[in-house]
Length: 435
Ligand code: SAH
Ligand code: SF4
Ligand code: F3S
Image 1 (spheres, protein in one colour):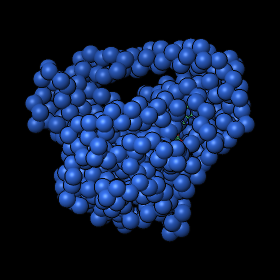
Image 2 (cartoon, rainbow, N blue to C red):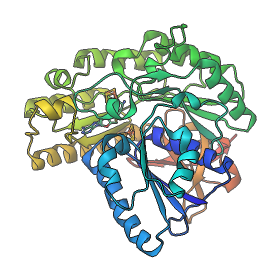
Image 3 (spheres, rainbow, N blue to C red):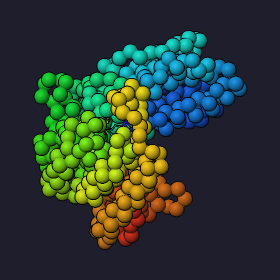
């Protein structure tokens, strides 16, 4: 069969789709880009906000129309909305099967059942069936994602993820390292370790494994030039981890530490488990110990009960830390979460929108000021992809700055030195001055 994937949401979903594509190809199917050409379309979904969920329902509308032209079209739905709305999804006639975030290893078998005409829901936990032997069709040839821990145990009051991804479960360290070795042999030079809380890695294994030890072990693989990890949970970000990062130039200087709010009152209602002062201290320690580090964060505006004072605490925190990137979102109540059950979504829409836009403008201003510091500096960059239509490519620095420069496509995946000539609030622009 020809199978097309549509993937929404975070890197976990992208990584899951890579495994499913690999497994289906192994089973003799081919992966195609176009939905029109496909015999089966699998939609990997995100439920983090209402808008993310809407993307699935928009897609189902299109697929329903396509099914009128091709009655045999098979539609599978997986990912976080599949976990959350499984029964409802199967009431859509165009949907053939629905499966959960921990059932992806069975995708080939499920596709055969669906093509035999069966309609079903599969929410079982088969996550142990995924390991370093799982074939993966990776999107990049240079930079690979490896999931090291599944699930989340934190239960922040607004968040659906613990309900859709289940409890924390770490992969065995030997298995992760086997995958990293294999990738190095295949020519990969960069790896990102993935999890909702990578700092929790190893706690459930009870054998002393931790993110810090995993990073140290991975550094022994010499071919891996850059090692990244996502996402960190501020409360669990240990001094040991800071020291490991500081100790090696091959570990990313870009650290994603979602703060969510700068107000103690709101942090408490969010059940984040830390205070503003704790977070500020942590960021000071990181900046002191890790040279050239850049911090990024996630912020929610308009959480229930957020007053102007609470919001101003967030503004002042952003001004103090001067993040490299801020992912901003308006609070969106998620069915079944504590905040949706207990707290009224009482910040008016226009206030949420204004707060979001004001923070966007503030962040842009900070980015431009920070970027100007790079003018005339020479940065180490690895090429990543081409910019459409102008003979330029873009690459990335160790602290996650995007740099655009003139180069042939064979410079993709290659480390170069770039002198920065001009900047924007987004990318930096420069020219190659050496390897
Ligand atoms: N594990 C990570 C990120 C998980 S979801 C962490 O702890 O931060 C990614 C981001 O989506 C979150 O950081 C949060 O900013 C946002 N988010 C999660 N639930 C949300 C909700 N109900 N409304 C708005 N934004 C939300
Ligand atoms: Fe959601 Fe909190 Fe878990 Fe992040 S740590 S995934 S925000 S519950
Ligand atoms: Fe979305 Fe699920 Fe990731 S809700 S952000 S796809 S864990």
